[in-house]
Length: 444
Image (tube, rainbow, N blue to C red; front, side, top):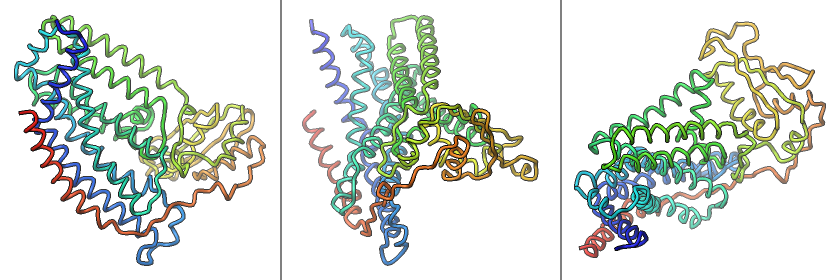
């Protein structure tokens, strides 16, 4: 009798063989090179021009951040691949066994379905890590060009895309295990993905609960990680979704168990997921970390120290529609930072329409009302500086002096990315061709 350890090792080897002969994986690898090449070259070109290449826009070079100017657009290729290519790989690893009859052989090993789905998830994750070699190569190229790399923000960026890939793998595994055919699983996976986009769309238009739910979609999570912001609540929600997706795949992988029982177990898993998400949403916004070098998600440290000393609850009433550009500026440049640093902040939004187009002449529209204890005031300024000025005035706190040495000065780099084209369009496909031939010979 094989031990569980040897059976698991056998299953890992089997899944790796399936991966190597999978067309979906090779397509993913092949597409990643040009995708990263296009995004990286375009980002480098724009970054160089803003840095003063050929004498253009040199005055803006002091505020250049590689995270926003280079890495966010470069790693967007990973987001596209995770949405449109990675699901087919996960579906192949799970549904392919049912189509070929290999699942019945796996069941004869007497191994728990949890171990079986864990092996498939590990191999899929390894496949994604290999697929991320082109953007990781871009980091080495950037260093070769003389660019600056800040390790914490890069760690946040990579972690965000790994979480996004985990969500995609879990979703693909769950749909492939529940449905009877890979095509059905692919359609169901696409439907779930589109539904997250719809939530984001309604969040931008309707606000309220839609807006809060949109903050936990994969696109929003990746966007925050790409800006160096690590939120504990969003991370835990993503992990809960991944575990639930893999759990559903493990439940429906047991073909010998009655469908009724699997439905009950799936319902229990979904209820546990809902409870976990509700608990995670109660985590305060202060449980987040700004890992970006520019501290673009935070106020200056001196302001944060002053704001943390204000213990009186602050309520802000915003009379702006969800689609009003002023509300976007207020949320992203001031209120999101304020929630992270002050212990008691409540923001209420009030508007009659979603666009605010026909509310411009209404009394009170555009006003931002602040209530701190027994004191209150009104302002129409949506900048971070304006919000800080109002809060300090209400709290009767002297604004701290600005520390010139702590101001982020940027890392300009006026150099075109000439070698990138050959690496991503010629060398990467050539390495894939050679690696594919060697792997197939070794397996055969």
